[in-house]
Amino acid sequence: MSQGGQYSKEEIERGIAKIYQTVLSTKNITARYIAVIALASLWVDAYDFAAFTFGTAAFKATFPWMSPFLFGFAVAAVQIGATVGAVAGGWLTDRLGRRTMFILNMILFTVMAIGAGLAPDPYTFTVFRILLGFALGADTATGFTYIFEYLERNQRLFWSNLWQLQWYLMYLVTIAIVVLPPLYFYFHTLLTPWLWRTTMILGGVFAS
Image 1 (cartoon, rainbow, N blue to C red):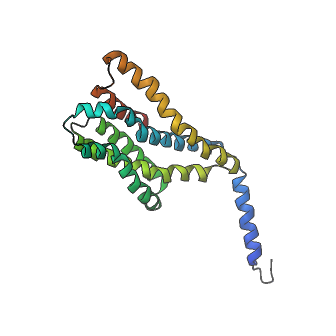
Image 2: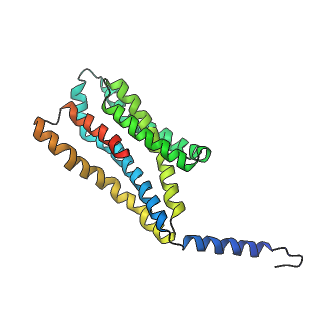
Image 3: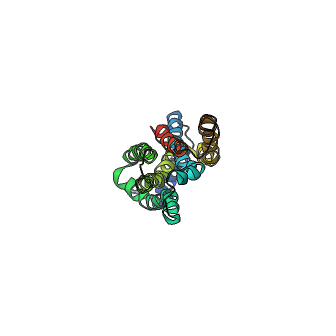
């Protein structure tokens, strides 16, 4: 400490660095639960993004009058919404707060996924999927913020990479075990509307 009770710039920087290292080295059991919840939301992201690919043939068979453009737009709707959500998600998180944005995203996950599953036509389906995609894109900023803020350094390395495994694995397991076999054995076809509708509605059930 310099004369007059004032800290030098170097002393302040060393103090900040020490605090930073202490925080990063502190294990927090509660933080693990927060990280699990955040990862669960990212798993819902993965499911809602990719699960519909298993139902596109059934979706097209449900509405055979669809033009190729409308069909492609309906399938891509979630990515369109996610692009906007990814751009606006960080800004909204800063304005509304992480907790509020996280809850809002989960509400949108539930309502929009179920709405898409009950949609009476491709137009309504597309609107629901765009809004769902917006929440998916925005949740990327919110979910990873929780993961990196609440975990110490070594935990971050593990938990921040775990989502990459579960992203591809969990929705495949869900579709391949929970959805496709029972529907196929019951209807003896994968072109039934129940395939894509059930897939969408399950996304809302998982989010709730």
